[in-house]
Image (cartoon, rainbow, N blue to C red; front, side, top):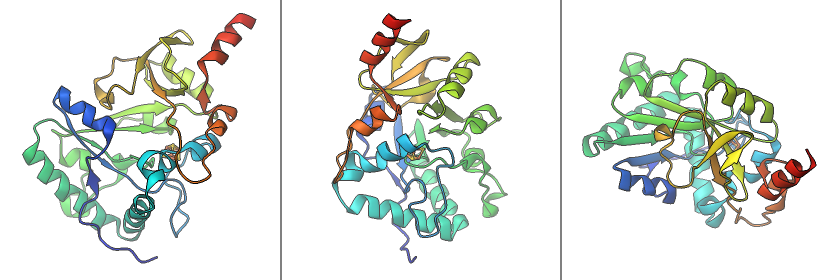
Length: 251
Ligand code: SF4
């Protein structure tokens, strides 16, 4: 599929990342089209579950409001898939520009994808990854890929594991190993399965979270045409606090 090279790949118009500004951090995000939503059918979310697919951010908020938003994300995805080196070089250029302007710069490359960016090397830049190229920039992401979480990654790349209805056991195992895990709830509880829950909606600065906690996220209603928000709870992707209380009563 044809694509045009966008003027900018990284954007800073996310309400949640803007909350980080009062803590002194400027954040830019790259939004691609998740899963196989591209002409080549390449899956950019290798560990996506059915539930997260249905409730994916791509269908909520800005993604669900204006047809231009998904179209722009698909265009960027086509560009990424067609010429990865050109794409990475453009990202490097944009990060160079932003890092000159902002002392505390945070970059989230998987706004709506789950790509192992730490593995992508830029040929023109001594075969370095973006993290290696910008050691003073704080990169961070959410991932459903347990291998990425457990592998050694650059010290300036912070990853938080994302629970879904298909990786519940893995999530608990990772918590037992001291990792942080995000869980989507209808409303954020104080504790879940013996782990402290912090409110992940206060800001998006995941690299500043305490260690070994659950990062609770409130389920964001999908606003796109035909959106069915009950599916997220039926599939088990999102958890209703009321149901936890009921289960505790039974146990
Ligand atoms: S893994 Fe994340 S980005 Fe990919 S489909 Fe699931 S929620 Fe969306």
